Length: 122
Image (tube, rainbow, N blue to C red; front, side, top):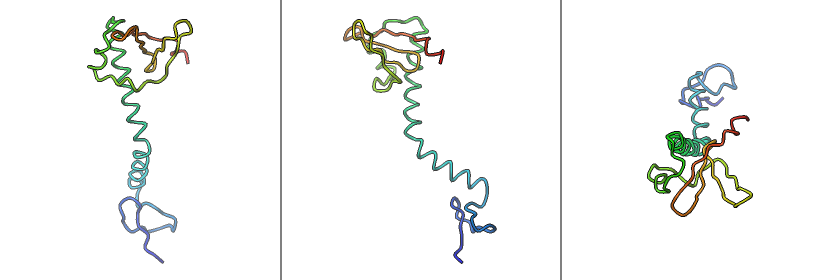
């Protein structure tokens, strides 16, 4: 019969023939490492979205509704990440949102900040 070893630490296993780990700690470490690798991309994207939301929230809540486009870029805002976008029917203007805070361009230099409180009713 081959020697069975813990999948996490490699210690020789004693007991049941279907045992995979020597302790709960090793089982948790093993599964946490697998989940960490699988969820890494999602966690990184969520970090960028949270940062974008925080930037929009701070600007909006400070009373700024119209800002220069460079103000977002200087604050490490990543324009490639947003949760959803809405196109208005009247002028085909696209508003990009990071959760409830959004923005749209009014010309090549300025951005209008908006807050959609209707999303909170979900």
